[in-house]
Structures are given as C-alpha cells and as structure tokens.
Figure 1 (tube, rainbow, N blue to C red):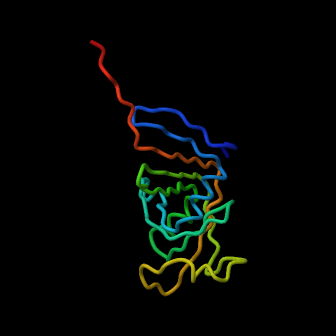
Figure 2: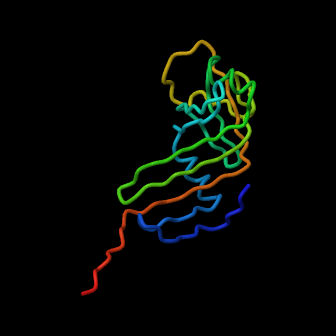
Figure 3: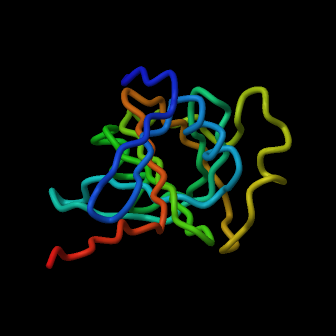
Length: 151
C-alpha cells in the first residue's frame, strides 16, 4: 500500500492537484456510499456501480448472485473508485485490492443492510469485502493559471 501520510499539492496544466494522504482518502470514502467496482468479465474490463460502506481499512459492498459475484469467484483482484464533483473542483479515490466474499451478513455490522440504499429488490444480498493493496486519491481545483503573452 502506498503510504502517503500528508496531502501534497502540485501544479498541473489543469490547475492545482493535491495528492491525498491515506487518511484523507478514507475520510472521503466514508462520506459517501456509491462507488464503481472494476473487474474482468470474460477477459474484458467491466465497471459496476455498487453501494458500499468504508471502515477505514476496507470497503464492503452488497451484490446478488450474478455476473459480478461469478467473476469474483474466479478472479478476486479488483479496482474500486469513488469520485465527486465539488463547486470549485473534484476529488477521486481509487483503490486496488482483493475481494473476499463474506456471505449474507457482515460480521460485526448488524446495521449495514439498513445503511446501504436498496436500488433493486433482491431475494438474497451477499456482501463482499475489498482489502486494499494500494489506495490513492487526488483533489482537483478549478483554478487555471493565467498566461499573459509577452509583447
């Protein structure tokens, strides 16, 4: 896991970009509950929206038996991404890790099913934990540097 202990700001052609600390990444992940899961389906990249909760060391999402679940049984290497547009910029957090199928309950979290919104009625929800190997985040500011031409 990349160990960034504090935010680091640098300039890009788009404006200021801040590399976020791991702690800051987890704070952002905890503040929302809709992300995107990337995995390989039939050897092709796929992205799925998922409801999730973050606990500061892993991400747990809910799914049903189907494409995501079946692919996780054969390849548990995943990427997970969350981002948000802000009034003056945006942020994005990406983690790469290993998915572990937990079953129909999250150990130690009796309220998880109440916390996560229900998009589609499903007969049986299954929970999956992503344990990150790498977590990276960036904040982008909408503040372009003005270039004044010389005469």
